[in-house]
Image 1 (cartoon, protein in one colour):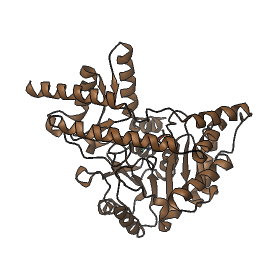
Image 2 (tube, protein in one colour; image 1 turned 45 degrees about the vertical axis):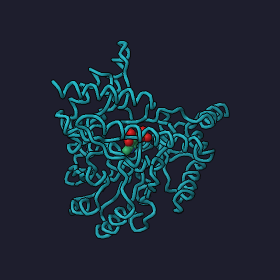
Image 3 (cartoon, protein in one colour; image 1 turned 90 degrees about the vertical axis):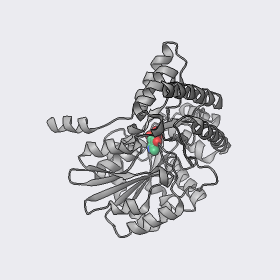
Image 4 (cartoon, helix red, strand yellow; image 1 turned 180 degrees about the horizontal axis):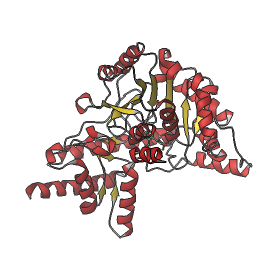
Length: 393
Ligand code: PLP
């Protein structure tokens, strides 16, 4: 019992959900809230995808499916990987899960235990560290630095590997920074990893279709030397605006695939059938909605970066991926978390303080541009007014 309580005490959360709850509460009290805290596209799922789910329900797809997902969907994922990256993956190594999170949950559970070290990006998606802590493994942060455009550094990462290191977690394009790690750096990291054959890799590529300025996404799947220890996390949530459907895919090394299946059988059994048919329509249907959404994010990205750089004490690098900016607010005189919560209370603008993504997030805030340009401009004006006033005070 005690051990369980301690494990749950170590487990963290995602503060974005708490901010969302607080923002909703304020909106219900009649406050005019602009939510730049949220990590989901502000678009509807494309109609043909919704219709495929409705059709699946009408056609009687109401029962369990295989725990690893329906075969046509696993085949469609393999075909999509081939189309986009020219990499051959057997559909038998593709796993369908309720979102991207279950993949990190399963991977971290498989490798984490007391005495083991797991490397994860800081600042980074908060669930990595939370789950590492839960398993009793030691979380070892890999610093993600502004001066490196929020890409991870191969040298710095490799230096942190010890005989205790079991798993290395990577994320590009990244949450919360929007950083994209260049191909040369990824190649350098992979070459270095060849010296550490016992270190598994979890590559979270859930934002892979959201890159800008001609930046090319490089998947870790394209490196055969680490394929037998690579877990690739991806999914439909961001690309197809399907966060609430709960649908993700992953690629596993053959030796781990059955462990992932067992974890699924012991927890959720399978993803609900109609959602899997929706996912199939997403991959095999027209991709214009994805292109349109990414083009819209690109426009907003420019508005956000330009606007943030005009605010007193704020400077912001141009993010190359995802839909987040991660401005430096050190010269505002505010700590990041009090700044985010005071901005919400006093101006109605919801943002997430950088420390919610790790110790190295201090001095930054995450601005999600999954909101209309008009709202983004309004939010920037409110933030500007607030910072001017507070600077003068
Ligand atoms: N990985 C990263 C980097 C994310 O930002 C998110 C969601 O915000 C996820 C994984 C989880 O995705 P899902 O909602 O599909 O579980």
